[in-house]
Image (tube, rainbow, N blue to C red; front, side, top):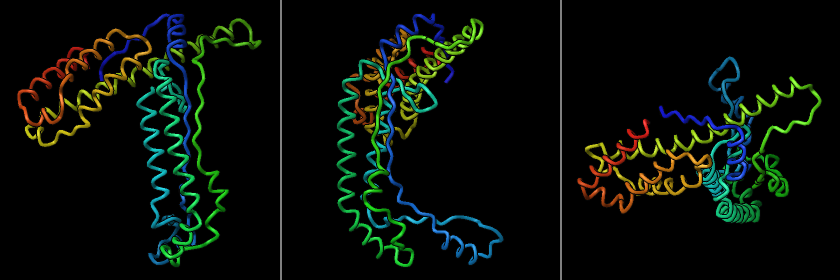
Length: 296
């Protein structure tokens, strides 16, 4: 994407607007892998293949034959994907920026995700001992009862944790390092703060570009009508709704783009696009106009 964000905002503006229009959220999910390195089998493979050194590792699936753990993993993956859509990047540690206007809906949905995750974990733990017994049959000679932790230890391997915190309003450092040191510290902080805002907003612009470019390329294909899926339009419509919240810097260009997307996709469905060449051409024309207008 070639668009320049040009978020050259006065520091006071950035602090005031971002700190009041967004918050920070940390979300951490952990799921037991149920994988175990079998050193004995790894050595046997090396020996069978006459390798001169350890050439690889054999990691066995302790719960082979059971899908219960996979179901928990799918829920965790869905939660992460949803979380990334609702937020934008803030720091390398995984902290994300959540628009304040989304907080109530986000917190409500997060609660539903947490219950779904917890219920799936509880159901898995209830059946854990039976699953281990079944694994003895599935793994045959690879089964080793010592590989399986007690159910209480397994419970500790699952986690669904989140934490909300405010966006800092300023670089309020209270350390005795001298005026020059304090000035340098503040400058670095403000530079990093601005960089985080720009990174967060660039992520939003990149999402728009990826979505529009995907639609354009699909409608450009002579076989496009055969390869159009409902998710193409649904995802774009969902993004246009989210842009109203994700635009925490109140970028007028992004708001204009959101309105253009809303108009271009109003009343459009993949079924209509598949059936109507005229609609495909008209929708592509509007999408391409947006890509050109905003210099993507």
